[in-house]
Length: 109
Length: 115
Image (cartoon, rainbow over all chains, first blue to last red; front, side):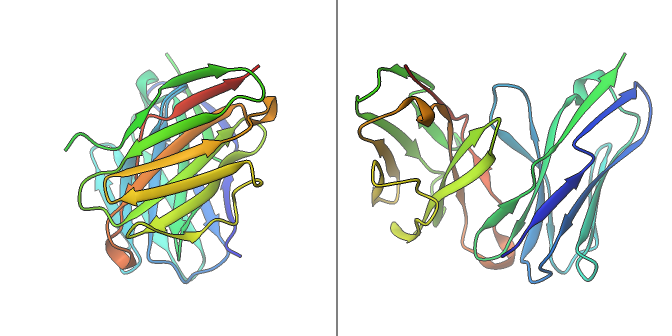
């Protein structure tokens, strides 16, 4: 069964810092990988979708990479802002979606 | 498109009562997923449908839970009878056809409190 792990579970950084969130998965037979953001009391908002044939995707200050062979993805956030504070989850798609437990990010003004 | 629409947003009920949660997926999406999220267990897949047919319900906790998708634009998740341990946020999500294209979109969730 696919297992998805996110490290660290929590991260606190000062505003303006660049940071990397990690996601690892055990089965490389995936269709795609998706990064989500979840604010407290809210639903999950899709940030980036990387197809299995792609290496990375970018949206604004966000860049996500995918290395299927090693079972890893990273989400890079440039010039972090207090508004980036949220929980970030990754999910891989096989016959269903498998989610990590998330990284809780706090950006300190 | 309005996105995935869930109702009610909040439900408070007493133990033993029946609870029905509703979901309208994004038009044209072939897949519909029901998830439950708690602090202790994180995000759990309960059941998913493909073209209105239940494909995997192995995540449904017990017989008190049931889900239906009578047509492509509507699904329900029912809990009868409800118990305090069912208190959680229930999310519905939908996705286009599987394979490489399928991006997952979530609703805002239904927060259930069973007293």
